Length: 158
Image (cartoon, rainbow, N blue to C red; front, side, top):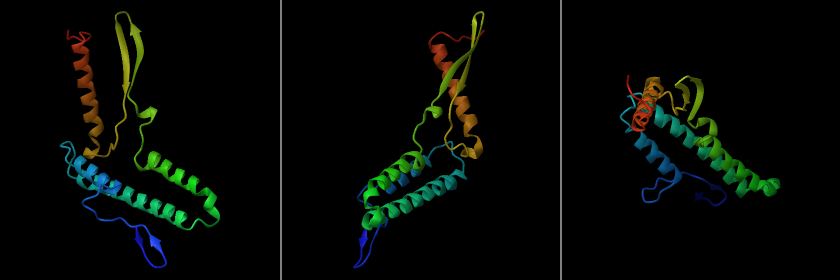
């Protein structure tokens, strides 16, 4: 926050010694960029996506900051504005885990000695890896399911 003689304003500070939400977000997506499954174009997609979200964060923070500094007739609504900002952080900035994104395994059919299951799972950032991340993750889930079923002596070949 920088203060002038007449106005106060909110600014992002370039700090190396203090951890801030924005610096942690950048550190997080820089770490994500090291994922060996990402492709070359993902090196641009991820930073662009997260820098855009950071800009939205700054805009929303500045608006809230201005409301707090100059509440005017909205003074009694400051808590509502703050709660709305926190809700936006939770729901839109970085999506929270919602029930429909949780993996689901459903028994869909039983025939004599066989059972059929349906497995559903959510893939975040599906556009990464040239839109192939869904297929890669589907194969990983299938391999892990077979491994665990074999480990439990439920699945055998032949």
